[in-house]
Amino acid sequence: MKREIPILITLVFGVFMIVQFFIPHPAVNDIANRLQNWAIIVISFSYVLGSANILRINGELVYRRGPGWLYKLVLVVAFFLMLIPGMLYGIKEGSWTNDRLFTSTYVPLASTMYASLAFFIASAAFRAFRVRTWQASVLAITALVVMLGRIPISHMIWEDLPGVVDWIMNVPNAVAQRGILIGAALGAIATGLKVILGIERSYLGRE
Image (cartoon, rainbow, N blue to C red):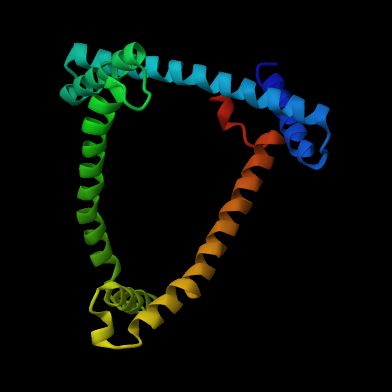
């Protein structure tokens, strides 16, 4: 029963949330809104449990001086450094937490991290653009044309180059992106149906 009851609850509520889109009745919409609010509450408590689990695991590694314990210590200190002032001063715009910790500390650190990813992207692009097959040739040529077309002096290289780049971005690129989005949407639908019907049970834990 430990598995049958969660699967039954998932089936009932999952089917109801799908059906309510096709039944525009105030009573049905009210029930759906209540279920969504319940889900938000459950997710909020899951954040609390997840935070406690992170502190427990990393705290034990720091106490035992396990591998990489200094990084774990930084994580624990940063966690409380953001949590305690946030609870005391709030997180609204203009608050001490928002101005000092988020805007002046977190945002620059995040920007630095994302900027460092440019070097990894450049390395990955270099490996990907090695022309070994005709597909790699198409990728390399297209990337070169787009990069040249995006520089300020692209019209000096070839006056029609910006137009060619716009066509590449608006036609082949848009078509490929739509295909990826459709495929991702179908995959999400299939995964949702597998969860609702009880075929996918990984969320229940190990057998």
